Image 1 (tube, rainbow, N blue to C red):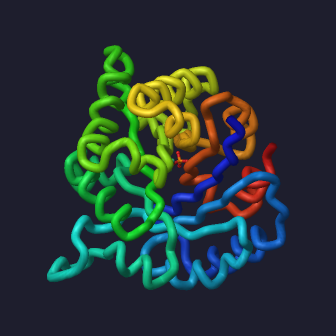
Image 2 (cartoon, protein in one colour):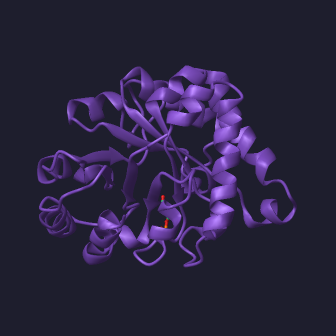
Length: 248
Ligand code: 13P
C-alpha cells in the first residue's frame, strides 16, 4: 500500500501573524513529492492561515472543536465555524486536551462524530504514558482509546480519519520513540483496525508524534506503518519544518 506521507504541524498555543507569514512564504514555494502538509495554528489564526498557505498540497487544521453544533458555550469553536473558514482538518483527542482539559475518550468520540458529520477530516491522537508502557499496558490503553471512537462512529468512519500515535513520554521531551518502537506500535494500531476492516486499515494514515525533528524524521518515515508525523516544537521553526517537509 503506497500511502502518502503526511507532515502535520501542531502549533499548540504558540505562533503569531509573523510565523504564519514566514512559514507560508517558505512552504508555498516548495515542491512536495507525494506529500500532504497540514498546518494547525491556534484558533484565532485559522482564517489568516487559510489565506496564507496557498499551495495545493498544504491544508489548514484546527487543534480541537466542541462536540456540539452551536450555542451558549463561551470560548468554544464549532465544526460549522471551520466549514465556514474552509478549514478541512481538526486534531482531536490530543493528550494535552485529555490531560489539561479533562477530555475523556467518550468526549473525544463525541467530538469525532461531530467533526465527521461536518465533513472534517479528523486527526485522532492516541498514546500511552511512560508508566503504562513500563507496565506493559500500552496495547490495552491504545485499544481502549480507539475502541471509544469505534463504538461511537464505527470503522467506516475511519475512512475520513488519520490516526496519530503520540506517546506522552515523547511529547516535548526531546526524546523520540525509536523508529523500531514506533513502527511496532503503529503495526499494532493498524492490526487492531484491520480486525474490523482490512481495507480501511491498509488505507488509513498513521502518523507518529513526539519529538520529531529534521534529524529523525527520515528514519521514522521509512518505516512500513509510519505514514508521516504530527509535529509540535519543530513545526515552529521555519527552516527545520521546511526540511521535514522535504524529507524523503
Ligand atoms: P513535540 O513535537 O514538541 O514533541 O510535540 C508533539 C505533539 O504533541 C504534536 O501534537
